[in-house]
Image (cartoon, helix red, strand yellow):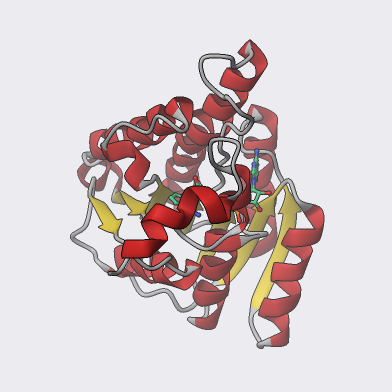
Length: 246
Ligand SMILES: NC(=O)c1ccc[n+]([C@@H]2O[C@H](COP(=O)([O-])OP(=O)(O)OC[C@H]3O[C@@H](n4cnc5c(N)ncnc54)[C@H](O)[C@@H]3O)[C@@H](O)[C@H]2O)c1
């Protein structure tokens, strides 16, 4: 799909990977709706986009809240006339130490709500709106945490594995709706989420063994793969790892 002139929603667009994707999409000529619960972060992404000559609007939306998700999509359509691209990217770690097995019911529900239900509702609404335009592209942010055991945060790992299988199971939407749903699986990326990750030690401590043998990714490394999925009219139900470099 050509990106220029399209309308895109990026959730978690106020920081990190979402911000980088929002900036890159706007740089390619998309009109971008930046969605986030962080008003200051979302507003600052919009300032960066407009300063560079692009089009963007911030909409406060909690992806785990059904009314928030529905409101986001209807507001985006009212603003820009339709929706062609959705990056379901907002995500949280469980946080706290230990986060397992001593996690509250509220915490379990919240991580599943943002990381899994948020992606499912975002994809459902995307299809509903893209149908009216004859199709579109959805990219879900999973994680390499989906691929193996993650004792540091089992709840997070399980939610990201769910995003991968959900995305694979949506491959058929390419044929039935002309909506292509794909997932990007980042390795460790230098964003704010890293500070909320870990086993109670500081990021410098828990990352040390990994950083001794590999380099952190930058948010733009992931944004490039998101744009590659959007452009590739054959990609559907795929999960692509963006691995840390050695
Ligand atoms: N940074 C990494 O190492 C890494 C690795 C693999 C996957 N990921 C995934 O990438 C995605 C983006 O994370 P990031 O690294 O850019 O972190 P980040 O913390 O910089 O950005 C996440 C953004 O999501 C927003 N957000 C959180 N809960 C939300 C909600 N309920 N509704 C709307 N917005 C919400 C936050 O306010 C924040 O702006 C997440 O899904 C994360 O799990 C990150």
